[in-house]
Image (cartoon, rainbow over all chains, first blue to last red; front, side, top):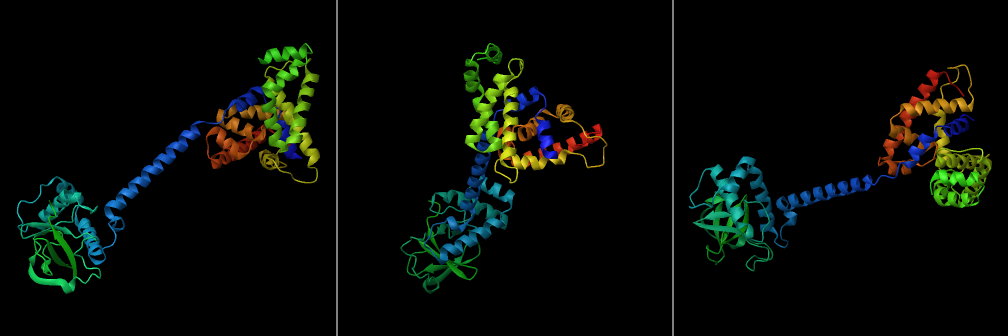
Length: 204
Length: 186
């Protein structure tokens, strides 16, 4: 009974209040708000995809098993080692003029710069992908590389030890010849117990 | 056609008044009736009855705000029809939920002495509503005068449904305190 009394009593309020409440048109602003919401969501999604493309191995070319995986993991590790200020410096740093080993900070900067220069390759990744050895620059062999063995038996193809990576990715790692191929074209880098195939001409 | 001209037609006993009213306020009154009844057939009958009531009321009435005048008639007729159809059972529509919420506005029994007449209660609610910000007032009336659903109110005012519920809850609490302060009980 109370609710009926109240309902009828509410019906008796002033006409001006009723008219004002009735005149309130549905908000068109809500549509704009939805637009803003979806735009913001799309921007966030784009940012996430961009970051994933830069950092995640998922977005790298498929096919290559061990070398690609190893490279990706190594590249990620290398990236983590770069402090923000180092990354910024690396972006502005020139490509190395000599293959001499440098201090670790210089090495990272050099690597990042070299990686930027190598961005025209098929690898998306951050800067730290180029290895320097014997005055040459090397980048990871693509999964489609015809000289990459299908079963990833890289260790069996490791030839003569040629020295160590002078700077860039895998600095101080041992470098081996790759089968009968010229070290100018291909080298194997023993990185954390596993061989990674690198090919020459990384900065060309 | 302007409202004053339509009212003049009623006063002149011209049947064109009904046609003009239907043209201008048919949708408005139908929306109120539909909110309460949720039945197209009953809605149409209530709106037709509204025109008849308006025809009988003018003259002598000369409403200053024709929409509110007609809407009030529709609301009362719809509520009566709703009650008649739902004496023993709860029906669909927005009204059952709105009716369930309204008693929260009433002070607890024993807090005040006198039971007031409906007219006095209406005046108290009117005074209370005029103390509220415009949006809160309109949200309250959209719910309990027009019997809009929460979703419809949210859309109309560009709010989230939870915000509408929150506004209604706070307003009911304020009204309860206001009526208590005024010494009004039902």
